[in-house]
Length: 341
Picture 1 (tube, rainbow, N blue to C red):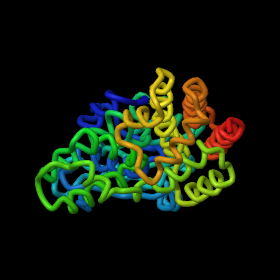
Picture 2: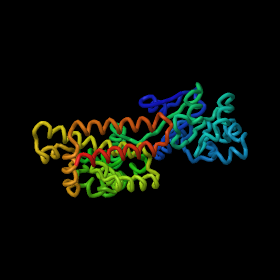
Picture 3: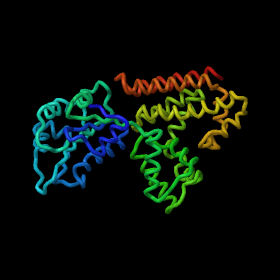
Picture 4: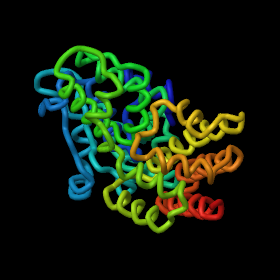
């Protein structure tokens, strides 16, 4: 079965008893790993317990195909249910897992950690279609889920966050759960103890470090500098940034342009329109943002947002290479900006 949204969160807290195996996959490797740990903890208190948790890889299963069934059927010497984690899984283990789901042994919970599996993936199709298995897609945090992660992490350090600082953090974090938590832990260390995170704290600690390359890409794209946009995009892909994360970052930038352009359409000045934005445009980028507003009136930036939404949907549903879909969207926007000089 396929689990998303609230159903996925409910399942992570208490997996259905009839579910023998769970596939956790997606471009957000940090969120994938976090969810794997959460699932294991529903069975075992300590995920590192060697007596109750077995870790396997495709290479191990290739050499010993019976190992999965053996581990799932094994009885813990100290009692209690066991968990079996299959790391770095892909379509090469589909047939083996299909055999296991057809005749599951023992009572262990099998958790399969996959990468960014497309809709045509045989492993993904197997888990989405099986009655005794579940598939959880893990995409970068955004909106309410990102806000929850930020507030949860800061609350654990005794910190609250002011609205404008929260908006800034939401604009500069997300995409990878592990990186998001690392950046927030750095912010908590910077604060030095309980208190309230203000805008100046977020700027001083996070600055552009979490999304410098993303910001560079957004600026170059909106300015029509397709050469720089392509160069930055290539760097992001080399560093392992997923296309969906790139598209969402671009969408956030164009949403800000759309909001400001809408205010200008009501007769306000550029500076008045930019003053509406939360968080505010960083001073060193203010002049560039003003110039972008002259290129992107509300109707055109609205069409740009539609293009980005369609590109993200294509990345998730068509099975086409996500990087190519993303690159095409970036070039289309950059060319559109160039024509609007």
